[in-house]
Amino acid sequence: KLPTTPPPDATIEGIAGVAERLLRENNLLAGEATLYVEISRGAAPRTHYFPPRGTRPTMFAMASAFTPSDSRTTGTSVITQLDVRWLRCDIKTIQLLPNVLARQAAVAAGASEAIFVRDGVVTEGTHTTVFAVVNGVLRTHPANNLVLTPESHDNADSDGEDADGFAAKLTVGSGNVF
Image 1 (cartoon, rainbow, N blue to C red):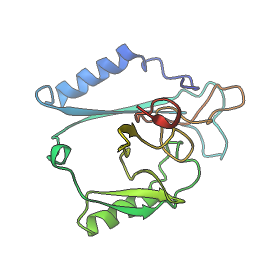
Image 2: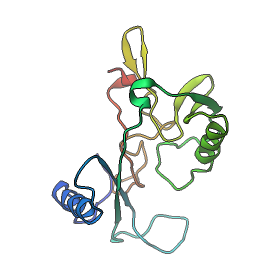
Image 3: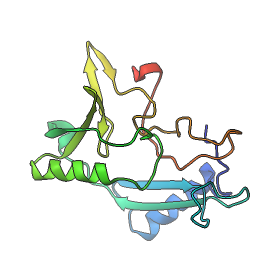
């Protein structure tokens, strides 16, 4: 569910067309690439409340080359950091300062990522989802307001019409047991 009205070109076909054009124009048709798509409520005056109905949502997309890291097979080093982010991490915003500071601490320590811990529980990385095998079961943090999820969590107007932007991350089932 995406409780916002997407721009007319934000269909699967429309996004696929944009992706094909971005890949072609950036010479990324061979090899691996990433596509980043973000949909927001749209451009409106800064008022500290939602834009009026009828404001056209915006869609941003970019493509870039992707070279898989050897750490996919060899593993990598990480550090843990206290999760000092706000309590609505499920809302995709530009408020990334805690993530940037934690990732910088990881780089300074020679690690590739910082894993956030809140009240003794692993939430997520600065830009990654944390998965673990516990007693033979693949697990990650439950989809709730403490982690970024594929859909905004409880993040809509009372009529369910509008929500803030979203970003895809894998979540499955209650407690995210796979």
